[in-house]
Image (tube, rainbow, N blue to C red; front, top):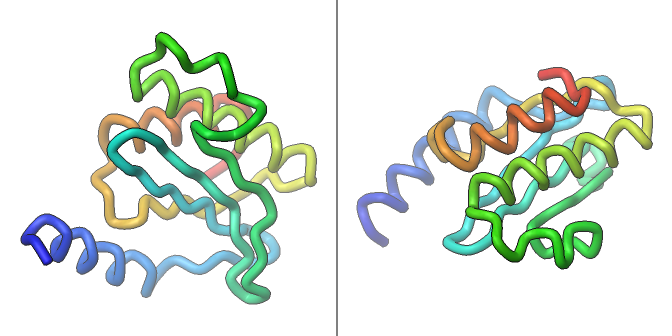
Amino acid sequence: MGAKLAGRDRRKLRIRSRITGTVERPRLSVFRSGRHIYAQVVLDGDGRTLAAASTLSRDLKGTLDEDNKSDAARKVGALIAKMCLAKNVDKVVFDRNGYLYHGRIKALAEAAREAGLQF
């Protein structure tokens, strides 16, 4: 395990010890890979996923061809917010999953806020 991954794992455990998704405020969790970005809204008590979106989602297919990764993250953020609002979820807790609040993570979060999610 490399030093970067170990650092992210430590940050992730520290964050998750304080953040929990409840019925009133589910957890918006973000995962970032080298090519894609994934977001899901989770109820931790039940272990259920209320909504999920990624750069691989059918709703975004064909719209991400010439976008850079930050623009794609913005579209994923807007999509996850739209899906949450359709299920009457307007307040969430943001879980950056150990990643720094910078770049693609920040772009996704800001787009979700602009689309109507509160966190």
